[in-house]
Image (cartoon, rainbow, N blue to C red):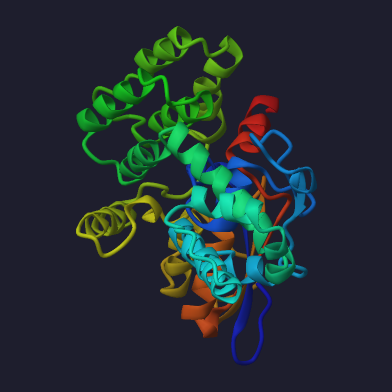
Length: 345
């Protein structure tokens, strides 16, 4: 903490293991979703394995500095992206006097293939048609909506028996792929640790029956060694956090918010506590004299951050101009790279 006459700038150093939940979740905003399902490395996305992809689309650049559409859509919900793209396609159709019916992402992909000149008109939007088309295919083929809803239920520590039934059903569904199986089981291990009836073994055995390798089955133990109650600091499931998250979940069920994006990263709860002067010194010992009025906050996370956390900090800065946050870390994670880190540890 750096003291000043008017306010103080705070440096809050966090450990990734204090919130092992956020990197395990499926994402539904554009940038986060692309990184989660396709991977973004050095601003590049590899589409070479996408069925029927054009040669010039096998690797695309996803840079907000070079791509105005991507810059404007980073934090848009997945459904909003389709609407934005359709608006551009509709505009081009009017110019070309085309009457082709476009009602879905598949229709948009066909339209782009049939009108090569659309690429000149739209600049980089045609690559987003390809990306959104592939994301849509993965969501449908991997049953991600049902998987994600169950994930969100677990983050609120909803009814244990209900969650067990949902996980059992999903693990027996052949549409649910290995990565989603791992997410569900590892989230269950963390979210219901210590509760009566907590029994990860039944799900680990179900993973083996699905052909998941023994090395990946051992991640259920590894996640507890990495970020279980005995290891992590703070109150990941403090009473205030649980109540707040549960209220948000049921608000989503009533159609006010998206139930697939209800989860808020733990660091947002910590920021709220810091802002109110309730951050426990026993969990986060401070250095540098008596606490002063809080100004700028610098958060550095050892072990990586997610695009969900980046988005949440962006929203925090809009809502809290007097306590703006600068976020930094060692890397940007998705579920796959997070599990690789846990395995190496």
